[in-house]
Every structure is written in structure tokens, then in C-alpha cells.
Length: 376
Image (cartoon, rainbow, N blue to C red; front, side):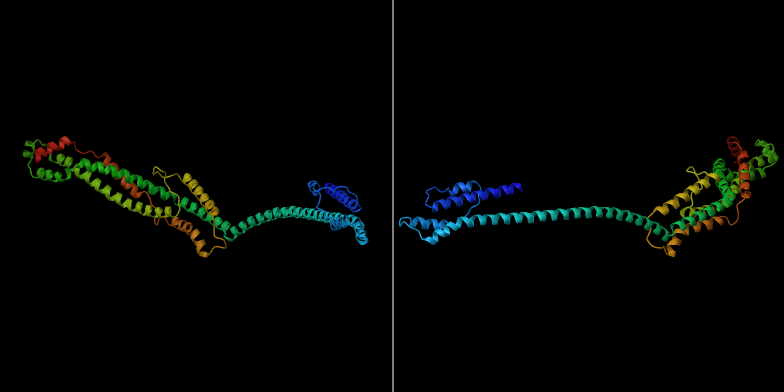
């Protein structure tokens, strides 16, 4: 602002100098007028001198020797009007500066108010964000309540507890079935060995007994057979072993029928979510270890079902049934896993027959081949 005032003062001084020079020229002084280029080079404002036409008239009237009195009076009045016009311009510029200063002050006040409003709006936004987060958290809690997640989890815990109780009640029968499964494997292996050792002996055995029963004692002695009955009893060991093998097959099939029924039921339960009863090697777990497996599986299932995204709003009856159907199925089927609890009667019969086969002494291959040559 100080620089602006200095500039205005400089312009005022220059204007006064121009007016004084013009006045002297009109009074007949021959002082040279300052060139217009010099005034312009000093960054002075272009002042249009109102007395320029009067000066021209003076120069034209100079040769005649006298100028009209009214024109001289106007020329004398011109220097007095010029300063008043310059002061008016300066006052106008000062007023314009004051207006600008007032606008600047008003603008600063508005800016301060805007900054204050901006700070308040930032605080309000932070508060709104905290409120929104709290509302979102509450909405999630309400959605869980509407979807009955907590209730469904409690129902699942109750059902798994009942399933565990039913398994405990049925565990003795489950162990009996798995003992039968293991015995069937052993029996089938021993039966296969016995059949391999028999070969075609049962077919030849009947022919040998017919020959022995159709020969006299003298003929048998000549053939090298001293005792008919002892020889027939030795040959009938083949029939005995064959009867053991056939009995073992029949009893294993009866026992296998119970095992197959159990396997069908337990496979259906596994497909509905019941953990496996056996290890990776196919051995039955102990009841304690299986109870731990069921508890871990139930905990993981309940946690996973509660963490998965759900549809908003309360669930329908069908969706509730779908979520709990498998557990109700398992809980019901475990109770009725065995229509008749298995016992060890068939197991004992198979094991007894198996022992007979293992203890049975079949004739040596050399004796058998020699008897074929003798009798047949």
C-alpha cells in the first residue's frame, strides 16, 4: 500500500510540473516544454493538458500582438482545475484501495469461518465413522440372532452329545462286528491254504475206498496193505479236511451277512457326517480315541458353520431342517444300528472250525502218490 501511495505522489508531482510549464508558456515565457517521450519514459500517466488548444491560439495570435481577454482568463483558470482533478483521481484510487482492503478483510473472515467449519466437519465425519462402525457391528450381531446361529449351534451340541452316548451304548456290538471282520479274513486265508493242499484228493479218495472195500484181505496183503480199516481212515482224512473247509465257508458266509449289514448302515452314517471308526490302517479305534475324534469333528463343524456367510433375515423352516437333518439321521440310526446285538456264538463256531483245520494232519504227498500207484 505504501508503494501505491508513493506512485500516486510521483504522478501528482509530475502533473503539477506539466501544469506549471504550460502556464509559463502562456504568459509569454519561452521556456521549452518537456518532451512527451521523457514523461512517458518515467512511467508517468498520460495527462491530457486541457490548455493545449489555448496555447495554439496564443501562438497564432502572437503576430497580431494581442490576445482576447476571455481566453487569457480561461488559461489562468486551467492550472487551478488541473490539481483538483488529480486530487479527485487520487481520492478515487484511495477509495478503491479501501474497498479492496475491506473485501480482503471480509474474504479473510470468510476463509477463517470456512476453516472453522471444515475442522468441525472433520470432527463430525470422525464421529459419524465411529457411529457407523458401531452400527455395523450391532447389525452383524442382530443378523446372527435373526439367523438363529447361536440356537442352531446349541442344538448341534446337544445332538452330537446324544450321538456320543448312543455310540458308547453300541460300542460293545461294534467291537464284536470288527472281531468278526478280522476272523473272517484269517478264516478265508486258512481256507484257501487248505483247498490248495487238498487239490484233487477228494475226487480220488472215493475211488480208493471203493477199491479197498472190493478187495480181499489176501489181495490187500499182496498189494502191501496190512490193515484195511486203518488205510481207509487215513484216506478219509481228506474227506474230513474237506468237510471242515466246507463248514468254515458256510459259517463265514453267515457271519459275513451280519458284517455286510453293519457295513451298509455305517457307510450311510459316514456319508451323513459321522467320523470313521477305523484308523488309516483299517484297525478299529479304541472307544476313548473315537470319542475324542467325534468331539473334535463336532467342534470343527459347529465353528465352520457359524463362520460361513449366511442369508440375512430369519431362516425358514426348510433351511433349519436342512441344517440339522443329517444329525437327526445319525442320532436315530446309531440307536438302531443293530436290530439284534451281535454275540460271539458264530464267532466261536468259526474259530473252532478254523482251529480244527489248522490242527488237522493231512497225508504226506509221497504216501498219497504211493497209494494211488498201489490202488489205481
